[in-house]
Length: 323
Figure 1 (spheres, rainbow, N blue to C red):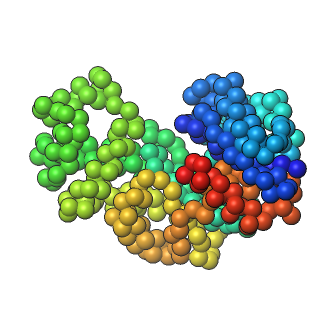
Figure 2 (cartoon, one colour):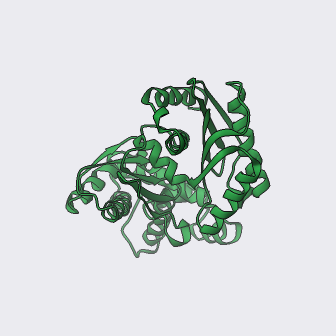
């Protein structure tokens, strides 16, 4: 028997396979968000990652069972499309398709109950209880949500910088940093940069690092932006906590670049959760998402093989090859 976990995102696809003899293989290929690259290419990349991993242990497709945690699964239609495609591709005898936030939480908690918050370019939170009930909040994208994300921090930085320039808001060092970032000869040139040439979500999100730097130097506006982001992240956690009916102290795994701001984010986040009487342990993820997918693949078919020693070994292999 061979089980497989697949973490398929917008930039790469990572697959990990484990045999009942505890042999482990890993493979990596291109993206597998079918909205970005098309269904045929997405399935081809998943197959490539799996075949790479299997080649390391002398295995072949189809595997016994596989779980695919994929980006871009935001509607029932998306699930129908992918489930049909992976079934027809004969990648595994049993296939389990889930949203990428599901494998992130299984990995972060080792398959136990808990909550994850992902605050990178975008933001989303999810939770899992003892019965396997799953709740997801946020993740609505930059137009409809992504509160507490690097994108929203960057967007706020731009707004407050321009308010400071106009005299509508408090003075802030963010103004000069924005001028430098976009190489503006005069502030009004920002209209051309954003509305004519166009700036990506990723570029706006990159401003979050600048906000953290200025907050560390004592800029009041930068600190306020990060405190606001922390509250939004807290709202995600509170929503998941209450919807799953938690009453006890719960592990909350923090994932994403926003948390690189350290105490600038964590201190106001902890304060907000205390005000809401939500008891949590803020932790780093135990395992990467690909191992979360592997946990699901094994748990669904052969739970007796789900051993901590296997997961730890798999984690070491993934980190050795891919960091």
